[in-house]
Structure formats: structure tokens, C-alpha cells
Image 1: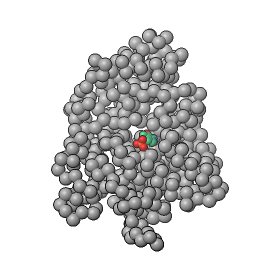
Image 2: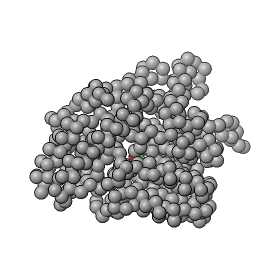
Image 3: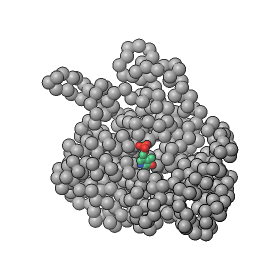
Image 4: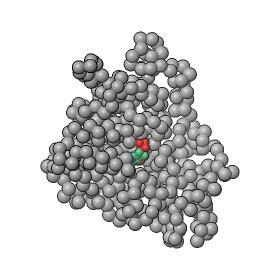
Length: 403
Ligand SMILES: *Cc1c(COP(=O)(O)O)cnc(C)c1O
């Protein structure tokens, strides 16, 4: 993998922040966008901008063909068995809300749902809203001090009352890779469905939907070099057929009269209204880009960055890393004794280094560790060891200023 060559594909990496070369270590929040993806978006608006699935004219057909080709690329990338099992959404949050909203009609009082203590708020709040509406009960798989799910506790939570389990594949706050194969197998043994939030996993781990036998898998394009405002809800055909539609409107109907409306077939049943057409096509371009480099090469290189930075950071006096699972992606959450994470983040920003500080949309994890938040650095395949060194120097400076 030629990282210097790859970096040339990302124009933003050339810019300066506060007079310093940008070091972008906030990849867990959103990834940067390669020229190929940017060009795909501008090509759509320059050359064939038209609404899809309805026009007889050439532009509409070109746009429809490319949008549907992107759906098949996504299907192939994740090894779904059918293209119509890939529903385009605006992103992970939207995808989860489609399922939680549909489940409103599938649950009864006393049914149980299982979530993990490692979740992003977007995989907690929609389910709490659902429980309030239906009288279903939310159970939580706890974590240990390493930020790893306690699987024995998970087994105890499962019962015939369990209807759905929803867990992230990788924690955005700590980087923990969850044992989703075991989670899925155990849930299925009780007849429960499983939704996996793959937003943080997709850039680093190749998920195979059929091999996983997962019922729902959701992710956002912007975490893997695609644009914002586009993502997918994958569902097994049987699961998507059972799930009631989310929004009503154009595109999602078969026939409308004032007496009764029948819904369109998959995937259109869940795709009401004009979608993010350029975004969908650009999502396909992002997968092409990543696959040309190779998911395995990316994962191996990011693992090296993670090991290098973890080792160096561990030597800082008073620095504590949260999330010490053996299986992690390139995310390091930490605090330095006596210093608020926000203050470190602000000084790093002055030095051109973009990190995330705060609770990372995962307040229950921060509560577990009894901290207000952390400093989080997260790497992508276009980051370098030199950038890590720059960050380490800047961190030393910040600590000496703040202590
Ligand atoms: C980023 C992220 C989300 C939210 O994704 P959106 O694109 O903001 O909807 C949810 N879960 C995890 C694990 C994430 O990393």
C-alpha cells in the first residue's frame, strides 16, 4: 500500500489549519472523500441530473441505471443475496429508525429487546422511544473494564420473550470489535432477530451478510469515504417483507386510491420520495475506491498505526486508555489525569490536529467509566506514522501547558 500516493487522492489532506498542516484523526466521526467520489457527485449534476424510476427520457434512464448499479455494487461488496435487500437511506440513524418504527407494529406488551452498553445513541434512543410506545422492555448487555461485552450476561438476558437484539459491530467510542457471530447465533436460537450497527465497522472490516446470517445490518457511506446523507438498511428479504413501511409517499406505492393504498415491492416499499441519487451513485464509487486498495490491506495497515500509537501513548505519565479489548479497530480513547479532554482537543486543534473530544454519542460508556468524556484519535488508511509523531509531540506540549 503506497500511502503517499493514496494521500494525493484526498485534496483536503493538503490544507492547513491554524497555519499547520492538517492532521486528520477524527475518522470515526467521518472519513475524508477521495477525488473519484467528489467527481462522481459533480458528474451527476453536470451531465445526467434527473429523477429516477419514473422518466421515459434518456437522462432519467441513465440516472436510474447508475443508481441501481450502485445498489448492486453495495450488494456485492457485502454479499447480500439480492439487490432489493439493500435499501437506500440517509444513513445509519435513518436505517435504525426504519426498523424501530416498523417494530412498533410487531411488538406486544412485555416483549423484550436487548441492546449493548457499548452503543451509539442512535442505536439506543429509537428503541427507548419504541419501548415507551409498545410496553416492550429494554435489557442491556453490560461491559467489563476493557470495554468488552460480558457474553455470559448476554446469555442470561436471552429468553423466549426476546424479539430483537441490536448491537454495533464496532464501538465508535472505544474501537471494540464485538463478537457478532456469537451474538447472532445465540439470538437466533431463541427465535429473535438481530440488527447490527455497522457504521464503525464498514471502513475496517469486510462484513459478509449471508455468512453472518444477520437479519438487519446498517451503515453510512460517509464513514467509508462516501458522501454524507446516504447509507443503507440491509435486511433479509423475509425480514423486510414482515417489516411495515416507514414513510408514506411517492415511489413506495403500487396503487393509490382514497379507499386503500397498496405498497410497492422491495426495495421501493422503504424508499419513499426522491432519494439522494448522486449520493447513492457516489457510495458505489467509494466502494470501488476502497476495494481497489483492498479491505485487507487497509485493515492490516490501520492495525500497525493502532499498535504504534497505543504503545507510544501508553508511555505518557497519567494517561489512561479506555477500551483495551484485544480485538479493536484504529480508535484510541484516552484521558490525561487532571486535564479535561476538551482542553487537550482545543490545543491540538491550534496545532492543526483534528481529534474528537466528549462523550462520542455514547454517554452510557462514559458513565460506566465515571468520566465526562475522552479524547479520541481515530485513524484511516491515509494517515501516517509521521502524523502520529506530530500528534504525540503536540500532546506533550498540551500536557505541559495544562498541568
Ligand atoms: C457514526 C455512527 C453512527 C451514526 O451514523 P450517522 O451517519 O450519523 O447516522 C451510529 N453508530 C455508530 C457505531 C457510528 O459510528
